[in-house]
Image 1 (cartoon, each protein chain N blue to C red):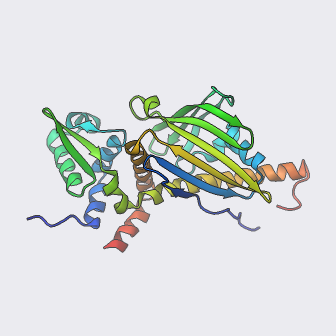
Image 2: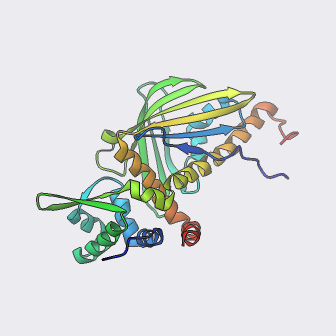
Length: 120
Length: 165
């Protein structure tokens, strides 16, 4: 029996550029295999291999609908692996630090109205 | 010269299955924070963060008015968002929709974002409550934030992975 996927396995699985591309594509919603193949421009066998790796670490889930296999992101599984909220938070932190700078400038303009360099 | 002091990091929480909340305090009065989020030439200077330059920042600030932001991400991809203003209380509160143009039928899965500003002693706390259409959409938005972060700060993540080993 295969051993359980570890966090490090999962990290490696989603670190591979092609697999990141797959996750990116799935971030827009559930997709059938043939759509993923089209997005990546790779052969079906390679894509299937990548998908299998992602599935093994729980990064994606698959379900069958008729003859189609539909893949989707498994947000719950990705969460502990990447501390994803932290990443999201970092985007906002960076963004709003820039806003601090804009605000500093607005404040000094309001205070000084031309002679604003006394208390920077 | 002293380095600029930042007011701290944004605090992100998930108050419900289909929500994201971002809270941040600024060392500035509410009217200036309001200007920074509503005037295109000011928005252009911070919204893209380190991820890329903004190529479009259009804001028609009235109820029913539209807004649209486009960022030229570092990988050459254009990332667009747009929406409509639903409620506007100057210096206090804005409710607007937010659709990500990178997915099929963006308007069907648009967020409804409520921004509130509360000023005390010249400082302002900004809260943005992002109401997603469902949990799946919420998770995907956070996951795609993760994806961006992974591409741009892969080294940091590598450190994390090492520390988990």
